[in-house]
Figure 1: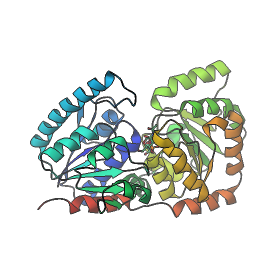
Figure 2: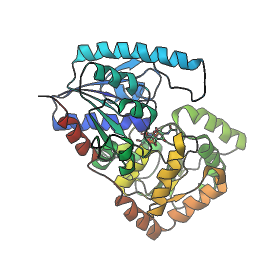
Figure 3: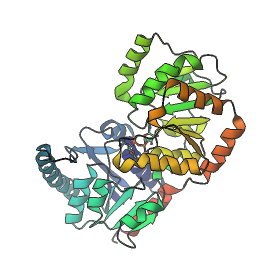
Length: 366
Ligand SMILES: CC(=O)N[C@H]1[C@@H](OP(=O)(O)OP(=O)(O)OC[C@H]2O[C@@H](n3ccc(=O)[nH]c3=O)[C@H](O)[C@@H]2O)O[C@H](CO)[C@@H](O)[C@@H]1O
């Protein structure tokens, strides 16, 4: 099979695309893959690091208000579509798959004009702008949440889960704890604000850091690549240093090895992270981002709280004290964590990549 995948901007769109092509390669090593991403998104490093051929297009999103910048967006869209068409004509894919983010717009639109079958994946229960635009001519849609189905024409969408969930569940290889100067045998809490880090979560963590020093567990605090220097500066200004049981790092490049090994996850409520955490059955503390379309992270988080898999702290009530208190209460109560883990597992889809691949294969012309 020859497949082009496109998705970008943030990890939540990139990792489902990568998980899909990794699994395809596992099933059939002769699969030829081209990843088309944006020039500025995280994909420009994540994809080549994962060993896939990568081509980039310049794109940007629409501003919701009237803005001259939107003329530039249209110009970039048209020029990216023209370039994507040439890439597709050269690569000759059997199918083109989009996992959301602006860049998948021109790539799948070009494929649709060339009559190549297209499949999109929607990770959220609220359908993203690009996927809504592509839905008019797409061949099939895979969704993670049944709630997204009515947004598409009848019969178009199928629930497949989120392919990245399978990658973390299969999690080949083990995590090297020495890389973080931490122990493999001490209970661990992992804290990260989505793929880019979250300002308020980072501030609350800096305030909470000294309290972790004498606790019977260890802490991995992931700041987000672009926020690491800011956190270091905040720590210095507050006179705070990380204790021996705390690692402060910019990014985790090998989450499928780390996440299975931790005891509690604290973070945003992005759809791909939640798919991983439910498939692995991890107890969670969620601080949904209030800055996303239709407040969809709060909806994501609420459904997990109602199922008993997560506790929620609103960004408004997030401080060093509330954050430490909630973490400490759970890290010192294994029974409660276990009950949350069991509830999380019931919501996970650990074979999502296989399900999505079945859908992709169903559209390929012989
Ligand atoms: C601000 C924003 O627009 N957020 C959206 C974005 O979030 P974002 O890109 O943050 O997406 P998610 O939280 O869903 O996924 C993050 C992904 O990055 C990985 N990861 C994260 C940190 C790290 O150090 N290493 C690492 O590998 C996680 O394991 C996960 O696979 O896409 C999601 C999926 O469409 C949406 O639900 C979110 O609302």
